[in-house]
Length: 221
Image (cartoon, rainbow, N blue to C red; front, top):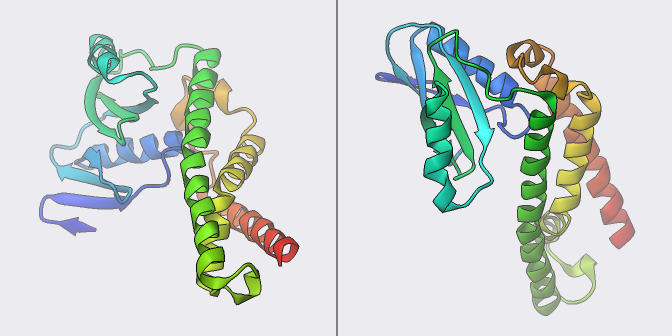
């Protein structure tokens, strides 16, 4: 969608598809749309400008607030210009030079980045499960101890929140299984991006999620 000199595209999911996402940013820059930020709704925002060959990269920041400035400076010293940071974790960089070295210099560092990111997401998902537990207590208080008496929407919301970490872990495991050689493309993200199939993965994950949810509902009810 375009509004004036700005263009908006829905993100593919920077957590599972950073390579595919960066390829999109590169392609948009080649036709004159330069990435400036991703808003809270997960929408990529572009500014109209001169068409040029740019290379975008994203890294997951795991340090403290005190380390942030030094972290950004380190990348800028290596030739990467900081564009924006999403949710205080995902740091986007751009380079207009073909001589700039890739952010990840070896397979192990890229593998470590993915592990840190997913570990942090799993830890943060525990907050969602905690809210699910409160929903569960609220359901027992307002609707009774028998789940059949609960409104369907409330029961579904409680179930999703309570088992959100398990669902997230299922998604991570599936993506890892589908793309077992992902880390081998640490310095060739564009090549790997062409192997990623977002539509297929989404259908698969939704199917697995539905089966998981239905199984839980049957066991509980």
